Image: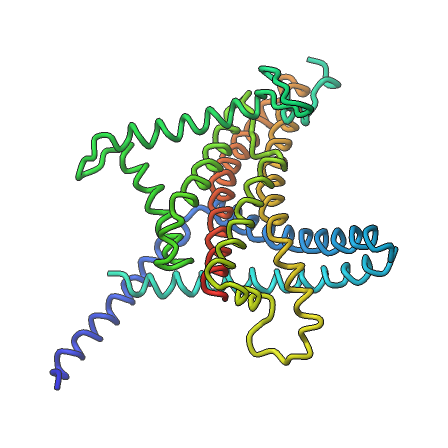
Length: 114
Length: 244
């Protein structure tokens, strides 16, 4: 059986390390440039909006060309347009999930490091 | 310069430097091709020269090259896993090409080849086709499971499969439009503000201040968009290898 004394000192060290890191973060936070944050936020917004536009374009495009190919003039276009809307939502959810995962991953990895 | 002659779209014009014709195709060596060649030359020069010393303690240049290498390697490891190692050369080349293209484009007078949808879409479609082929090679027909979320009731397949299919097919569009639109917007903004500087004469000093800020922001966007393109490539690779 491992020495309980040993483990408690380790968790204590862990706690102190975490507290120190949090303090450091508090100190560093205002210094981190908000321009980089703005660009990051812009990139996220852009990513999501482009995702919507791309899905709608793709749905509309598929429907339009299938209509021309099959001679079913407006119907496939309408159907695929709505599928495109669905795909846009799927894409947004996926992006949101990725961003969330990335954040989570980064946090846990920072905890693991050192 | 008269204010009427400031044309923010002029910078995106492609004109041939050496006219070449292959059959009915125009394969001229254009200014776009020139800057692509320039960026490839610069990348090669940068990587070869900076790592020539192979110092254990890297100097400035070597550590820059190592930073780029490690960044892409970490991206691949975090997003794809150890199977992603194989694709490192491709992803790294893609990253460096886009990064250098974006940054060279910020030099006044230079041409930005990533501001053309033809270029970005060509890269995106290569990624898309490669990912699709890798998926089918690794999983065979099982790759089609990607289009049906695990555990959903079977009757929803009628709606979900077309939606997932459209979503999958929209990837190359979103990948290419994002990079292209970011570059075009940034460069048009710079040109328009530059036009203000000329039009306002002595008061142009104010827009110049803004212009400096925007230029810095554009440098950030240039690096960020190269990063985003790379990370999305990694995520698509992950989907192809692990099927969610």
